[in-house]
Length: 199
Image (cartoon, rainbow, N blue to C red; front, top):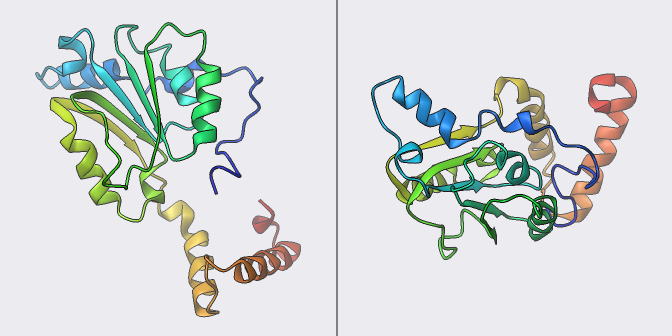
């Protein structure tokens, strides 16, 4: 799915707003810990490893404007196409990037270790077992390391969950092409009477 439909699917030539990564970087997280009287590895080690777990094709580039240049950035994404696009966007950035296409849930996929900071934005709620993946990420982190995780607000996605239940009641499977086509046909018919479904 993510090879055929990279997400997010922005043009390679649109100007990117570097301020988008203001909350993603290790120094902000370290500063928040400092306010609590604790020291994070990102400020105590010059070569702190940063992991973007589910990097998409934009975050490595915009994050590189916030991370110190001595912090190597490890970028993992399920989609090789996203990795290629992210690498292209970041060609002229001075950071050391380590690009890894791979599945965070695949236990045979080796994650980088000794991580000072992990950023996972909009990824974990797509996984079959987010708890296991969080534990895997945690196991690769240095003591006192920081992590920023963003998941969608469940309440804001209530309508999606209702539609999923309705499709399940109809016996439709997300793994059957014919069922997917029927689900799409149903959504198109609903969108004619309910503008909310047009998006």
